[in-house]
Length: 438
Ligand SMILES: C[S@@+](CC[C@H](N)C(=O)[O-])C[C@H]1O[C@@H](n2cnc3c(N)ncnc32)[C@H](O)[C@@H]1O
Ligand code: SF4
Image (cartoon, rainbow, N blue to C red; front, side):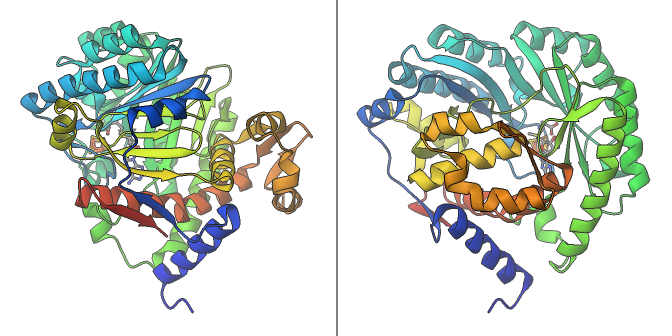
């Protein structure tokens, strides 16, 4: 019997995994594919997305789970060389398949704005058949008028800014190196630049934060005219300083109710202002193409900590920046871990991401898996519909706001748990023998 909150979480996580995939655990191992094996994996992929990871930041925030190190120019030089080598290695494997989305994330991609980013993107354009705009994350302190020109010149049309809050007290708690007034000016400059979509990330359910403060931040962003807001509750990852210092786990349930109340408030503000929900966490102005990290279900991840999802396999590169550079300088790949995905795991993974986007078509499932969605998932869809978690017109299935909340609760349990285990293991050991997610 589970005896503590974390045992209970593990128990629910395992039950959910069993239910969705039939597996007791997910086991990643140090099985690096040969180039021929990789070529085989790409054979059945018609179009893919590219994810490019820039693992540098000027300061490390105490809550941040992502793979990143402090920026050093010599390390960035080596990284530029290595990522171009990795692109070259994949060139012969991907061939002329169209690349239909390019996402540059971090860390903080704009740390390399004047030290290689243009070179990397130019190399991507020369190497792959790129048929898309660029989506990129940025730090508010990097958004001077000159830098915004440089960002636009990279082909970035969708820009995301890590704002987090417009209340100075909370910016201090999060150790963000700017004031509310400075960050508002940065957002204003980005908006005036004419990008297709400017997304702003904010965090809520912060320590001591009131609902009024959440509303204040979001109303100001709406007033500024941002195209999209991604609002995440503060997640505590056990390997971060804030996660280690986090309160007793008994607070988890109270936290869920706080999050629910705050999310309801956000929904109300955004819907009144003409935004629509475009993912579990994001609200986009009606008519604006949304900013998002992955628009196609299959993607190749480049860079330290980059992950690739290629239909029936998932690969994860080493998290160590120096290790990544060394591997590519030596002519090898940087893949540290991999897991073959059973048909049931692929179906569950596909469904997870489509539901995360809050709506999908039955026909897309049929096209991907060659079977009827209801045959595989009807017994879960029917009660979810009856409980008001889903809307279903026979063709489209869409998550209701309540559905989005419960998905968030499951996400908290499943993916945050797995991300903590996988990224935690990948940080502890740069070439782990295995990582077991349970
Ligand atoms: C890679 S960062 C954004 C770009 C840039 N590095 C910055 O911080 O401005 C991605 C976003 O993830 C969100 N995030 C990071 N850690 C989080 C956590 N522990 N809980 C919830 N959201 C988090 C923040 O909103 C952050 O802006
Ligand atoms: S939140 Fe952004 S700036 Fe802060 S450590 Fe994470 S990636 Fe870097």
